[in-house]
Length: 406
Image (tube, rainbow, N blue to C red; front, side, top):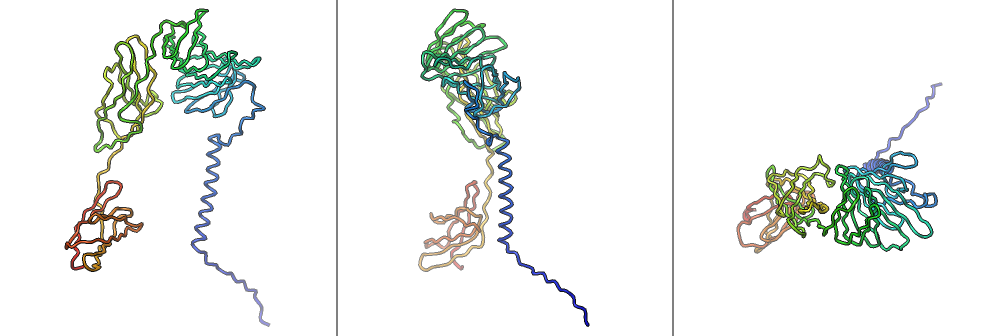
């Protein structure tokens, strides 16, 4: 008897290309979901929202922030990185670095904007018998406070050195403190402020500037408004044909008494950190300034005014300027020319060139398809025509095409 062997058969299936593509697309989708989840986790967008029920009573909230902003907790003395929606309590310290700024919503509805390189302490944030008390201390740098409608029972105070400055309703003002010379500044662009230093009260009105010397109001004068940048306009883009080019900057002059000079800054950073400032000029008497050789890059520029009394305006809003290297135009090649005489004066011209290029003949034009092919019907009694080809990068091609003998 012949032995029997068990036979196994394997069926091989031909896998279609579409199946492979679908599998690769699925893997790419899974990878993007995982990567997106990691990014969301790192950016704190998936952080658990603050539960109002568990939020400490009378805490302020961070509305927005940029750059490096840190919160030093009074309860633990630990430092935390700022996040939108983060609560800030009485006793907490807010520190912004050279690229940091934030906006905080206080319990009375006012907004506190902390500028770069500033230190602010929340001294009070409490409600009692229907009234609200907000008090912050500026240790260094600059802040801006904006109040809206407020009842008489509300008390909003900014401490600068030995002065207590009560901000009334419908007021917008900025406070500066320079730790090096212990001098402060108050600028009121809207509303009124009552400054109190050891019982000596001074009212600073709308459109006024006050200098503080060791907490006391030493002088008051009309507020010097910041200049308005004009040229180059915001987000301007200027081509550079060589290695560099000259750029002229201009701004609208500030109104104020006496001689006014200007300080100009050009930086590679929108925060104008010191190591990114590439050009700075003080004491400019004209409202324009030119730089002879700027290389292609993205810049930010701003300007502020100074009066003979020593008052300085706030910086203007920074304008962005982009210098880009202009490429030399290249010749666009074309070939596979075909001319079909349709009868009379009519011809059909076809060929191939760069995909997306514009082909023009005798005032008529068409676009080359994804494979570079094009067809254009023309009418002429001439024996030859000129063909112009161009693209959106400035490249061009010129051809003289014979219509006879084809």
